[in-house]
Amino acid sequence: SIQWVQFNGYTYHNLTINGDLKQKKFTGNFIVKDTNAAFTFKGSFDLTKKIPQAQFTTDIQKLDLFKCNIYKIDSTNVASGNITLSINGNTLDDMNGTLQAHQLQFIKSTGIIKLENTDVILTQNETGNNLQLTSSVADVEIDGKFKIKTMQKSVEDFLQEYFPVLFEAESKNNKAKPSTDNLAFKIKVKDFEPVAAFFKLPLKISPQTILRGTFNAKN
Image (cartoon, rainbow, N blue to C red; front, side, top):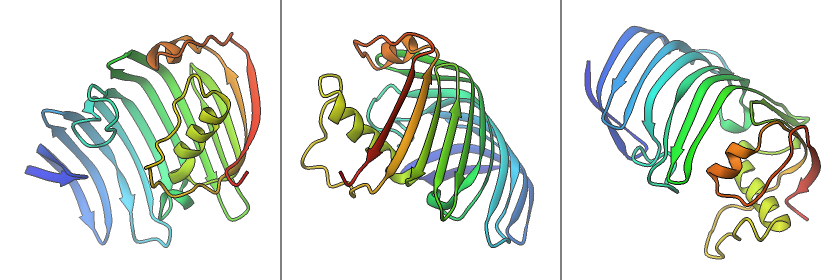
């Protein structure tokens, strides 16, 4: 048992770890029963290889994204669900792997959004990057040269450029590092209504709508 662990500026209490740690390899599980984070983790990681590997499953009963300093935009953000992850890589920008999520739920001040089943496949190498997402809301494929760290900014810049009425422009005081992403995307909409309600967007998109486009941060 561990009384507390601090991560990203938040202190998690009441942790229980049961596993085997040898020569930078871990196999086992741990349980967190914190006031703002309650989840179980079962899996393994191997840091002995040139490219680190990790496989795990986590069952999240409650994760307060705001209080745990994960997502600070909305003070009522709470997540729950089951996630299975298999990844390898040294950083976000050379990471490859798959993610499967079930019964995801996000709660914020504007409402609740539920995703029954979500699959993500990420492939990155020297020649390019590919991200595929399948969910009950939409199927998305992004292909090109991009960095995971700057993807959020690229999406925000695109939406602000083409839908300025719906999405506010970024503050000029924001000193975020400029994006160099250059990509093409395809989105097949399945059920956009929960997203529109969640983000309070006065926008409707009919099911089976296909959206295609390109984005170059340098242009």
